[in-house]
Every structure is written in C-alpha cells, then in structure tokens.
Length: 345
Ligand SMILES: [Zn+2]
Image (cartoon, rainbow, N blue to C red; front, side, top):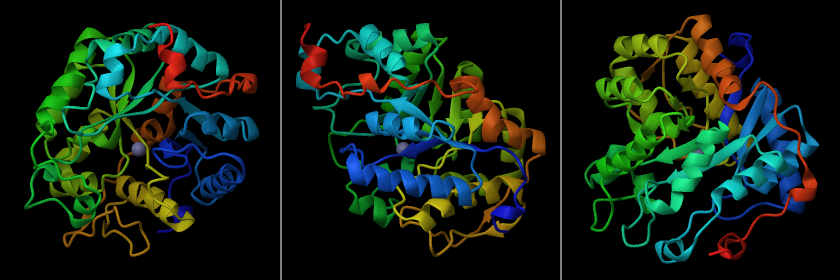
C-alpha cells in the first residue's frame, strides 16, 4: 500500500520538529528544511503541519502560509534559574499570539535528573498554564517516556545509546511525571492539551480510558514511539474499540524531524496511516529511522471507519488549533532570551 492507496482525506500532522531540540535553524539551513518539509507534505499527502521549532516555524509559515501552523516556544529553565525568575507568562504568551503562533509547540517533560529539573506543576509554570487556559491556547506536551526506559533489562539499545535509561539514581519515576501533569490538569480543567506519543499509555488501555474520562480537555497524539503501535497490536480489537470511542481525542502526529531524511519522514507518515487504515500485519520498513524499533511480532492495523479517520486526521486538530493558521507578524520575530524574560524579577 503506497500513499495513493490511503483514503482521500485531509491529514494534518500536529507534531513536526524544525532543527534540533537545542538549535533553531536560520538562513540556508531553514530554507533547506522548509523545502524538504514541503516535499514531505506533497509526497506524503498531507494538508498541513504544525511545527515545534520556535521562531523558525514562524518564518516558515510566513513563506508558506497555507501549509504550516507554528507552535510557540516555551523556555525551559534549570532549577537554579527558575527559582529566581519571575516570568510574566501572560505578557510572554500574548506576545506569541501577536507574532502569529497558533499555540504552544512541544513542551518537553522527559525524565531528567531531579536536582536540575523544574516540574511542570511547580509555581514557576503556574502563570503559563493559567494563561494558556484563559486564552484557549492549545499546548502540545511530551510527558515521560516508554516504561521500558526505566528498566535496564528492557530498554532498546538505541534508547540506551541516547542516554535515555532512567534506572540509575536521581530520575523521577513515570508515576511522578504523571502526577505532575495531572496536578496541572486538576488545577486547569479548561486547559486544551495534546499529549505526545499517546501519553506513553499504550501498554495500559484501562489507564488510558480512565485518564481521558477524568480529563475532558486532554488528547493524545500518535507520534511514534513505535512501541505504541506494537502495544496496541497486541490487544488490537480492544484498542480498535477505544479508538472509535475516543476518536475526538486522538490526533495524527509523526515527530518528523527526529527522523532525518525525506524517506524517513515519509516512512513515519506511512506507518501510522497503514496502522489506522488497513487490517494488515506489517513491520517497520527497513528504510525507516533507527528510533523505530524493529520487532519480531508484526503490527496489526486497526482499519478504522472513515468518520474516525476524519477526526483523527484533521478535525480534532482544527477544533483545537483553528481552521486557519494565524497571520504572521514578522516584525515580532525575535526569540526572547532568558535574561529578557526574567529581567522584571
Ligand atoms: Zn516531538
């Protein structure tokens, strides 16, 4: 099944990265990335992408206004800085809105040693969450990681090589990271949030159902974390019911940008669409990027009804982020620095 065999529906990818986690691409490198992503949209039959890439995303959107939404950056401080900083979050976020950001790009709460990290539910971020809630500004947020990363016997080699093993001392548990997020959601029931990688709950169908029932504004994206397709395949029929029942809470996303080449980007789109649309058994293609674990047992597709696909592919995105991307004001394109944000402290 190539792309032309998939159903003809608009598909918006809510989870795409520009540059690296650390650097914002500029000039020639941004132009190159832009061209590649436009090619991914064309060949991967996408309608649009929502990028997490800070101000680079805004520049891309100015160049291709019909193809891109942009998520605004949130500065993540080390604890020693955060304790001193008094960020005026409302002013900061209103600045993002005025510049033309459509929401908040990926907020990353991956496990990090406790001593330096600032929990999402700490007082430092309170104004951030309350402002996003008040303005209806949707947040894309990554919390935790797959559970096997806490287990030295189960962690995949590629993850271990990246230093993502949390079984050594000093790291928060998966449960602690969930509690932080849930504290935020308890305090901000109106907050619109999309949790990346299925909130790493694909090994726990009952837990995922319970979570979505408790937090009505929480959503999951399908970005790989290919363990999610693997886990779901092991209880395929139960999960298929879950997807149909929660079709307004699940969004299409790929994490493109973690993949590096055009073919790898396309493979990510293909894998998720194949999984949602067919009932075939299949494996990670050879050409896919190394972060997509090769399992012996196959994925088993969900073959969802068209109406569910429509929601997952685009309608949920449009409801959360708007049917049209905001207009960009490039006079406000400067990336705010940490000193600037904390100057008023
Ligand atoms: Zn991501």
